[in-house]
Length: 338
Ligand SMILES: *Cc1c(COP(=O)(O)O)cnc(C)c1O
Image (cartoon, protein in one colour):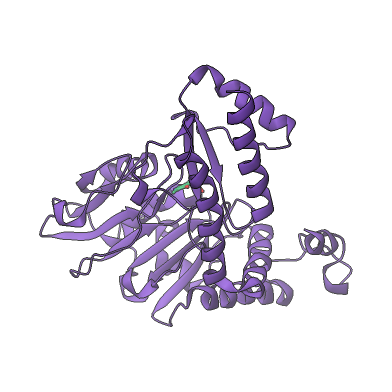
């Protein structure tokens, strides 16, 4: 934040703000290239993959993935583990024949039970369901299908073997920086030429050929994301972030498991290490919990409006000390108030 503040007034002694420089200027080209290089290092991305910095959020990828990786009339597969999967499925259903291989909102159905189709162009998964707090613990599938993942809420919080995927995408706003950029990491051979009747803007190859500057990019979000990547490298990279997420989530789940007040509806094996969701058995205490928490300076823990309860997001910016304060509060609340 301090670095951003400084660069906002005067970018590296240039006399202009980082938001005043042109995206075509050498200074911004350097920012852009370094951000990509740092992200490649963090995730160990090989030269077989493109790293794109696009706009339109993860939501636009719900359409771009089917548009680029299949053609009309073809079948594409989706695993439904919650609300974000369902949004991706709705969008794809307008464009292609969508086949849902399995559906659950409190667990991840075992891959051996998935109803697979024989001719799918890809299989889409949501690695972490941000709203319900369901996370896919590992990616066992190795049967040749092109795996595509929406990793918006857990990218850079856990080990990722990019070679297992055809395409991975994520909005920057959860673990990478401000909103306004979406990262797409896609295997080069999956990027085909645009076809007649398709918008050029929605084609990965067009963006790649233009270094993700086919139109004016969100330079500020791109720049801040680059700073965050460097910070992550400095802190020990993805392995260290994974260790921290495990430690942070373990502390909260321990309170939930030991409690007669708090409970989680997510099956233990699939509880997210990034978005911890829980509720209170006596629902009339929900508002009181939030009020008392706010008095203890604990905010932004209200569950998503569609599911209620509480949600604690443990993105990389959240410290262990903050989690300790929450754990302390949860224990005190149960002991003294409930
Ligand atoms: C937040 C989120 C999205 C939506 O991202 P936008 O950038 O707002 O489009 C999509 N998928 C998941 C898993 C998310 O957590």
